[in-house]
Amino acid sequence: MDKTIRRSRAEGSVTAPSSKSYAQRAVAAALLCEGTSTLTNMILCDDTRAALQVAADLGAEVEAGTDGTTYTVRGGLRPHAQAIHIGESGLAARLFTPIAALCGERITITGRGSILRRPLAMMEKPLRTLGAKVTSEGGYLPIRIEGPLHGGAVSVDGSLSSQFITGLLMALPGLAADSELVLTGPLASRPYVDLTLAVLRRCGVHIGQTDCGFTIPGGQRFRTVPLDPEPDWSAAAFWLAVRTLGCAVAVTGLRRDSLQGDRAAAALCRCLPEEVDLTDIPDLLPPLALLAALRPGTETRFTGAARLRDKESDRLASVSAALTALGGRVRQEPEGLTVWGVERLSGGEADSCGDHRIAMLCACAAPFCTGPVVLRNAGCTAKSYPGFWADYHRLGGQFEVL
Image 1 (cartoon, rainbow, N blue to C red):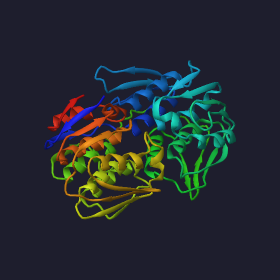
Image 2: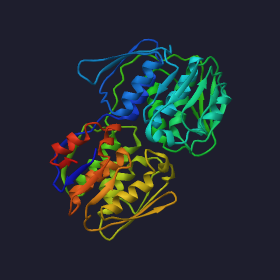
Image 3: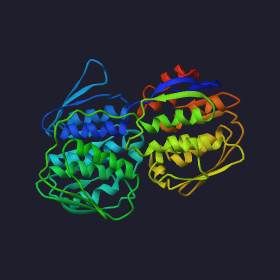
Image 4: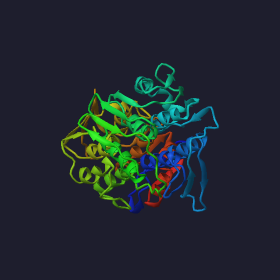
């Protein structure tokens, strides 16, 4: 689906959608519980819908409530499918693969779209060390895994994927033996691991932390508790950037005490420094790059973002291409971007590259362009924010489907 977006002044109030990162962790925890969990505020983006289907395929009984945002999940690993489909979700691939290994059956994890091009080889050696049989297509999906896992010590490069560490932290407490995760590189996206630990604590699971990783006592059971995904700071960051650029937009529902690293968007949108380290907040690059592109006479350097090359798109390349197509001045660096601010963007034709955050970037750039924005592949916002275009229209945005 392509859209032409006309210049219009955004104003009004929008409620931040629920965090898909939290929601998928909540689904995994509910799957690992032996009783019935209630999940509320489950805004069904594509990734959350995929997580619920994976849980059902692995044995959970999932039932939707009448309000469309509440789900009950009766947990238990009783797989009734030899293949599980994680959609296009990188988190689901890395989260549910270790959990699938708990089943003791051969299970194939597959997906669609960009996830088939995203490297997953970092999971194979650690899972083999823990006792699983693992094969893949050269480090890419589909992955075939067969447990059981036996616990013990395992080394993981923390700089490659916090999502896989999340999967291990979820899976290993249920083993009979104790386990230890030894991080061999600096832990990137630490706030996402903190979010995982918070969900585990909520479910009564204890994880110890050491100077070099985590200790996981075995024999633990997940406690059945209500889980309520909090609003998503990474989605809200686009509206915060639009507000900073002069539009009267209010964002409601956000929690200042959130464990999400992207809560840094509030401070960064108020005062964007000349250099921004994205090591712990990679998802903020698109809205912050838009903000930097419209600060005339400034130069902003974004660093620590090499992992963004393996998202739904090569996000360093796609942010650069989108802003350049709309009249911005951007240069790609090996691990980031340099953005020079201009007075006004020109508009033009840009491609989301199937990346939800690039589509939102282009839409939020439109109010500050002298001409219309033609956005290719605009529908991919459903991956994380299914109500994005409705909210955009509610705030006064004008667009038409081509």
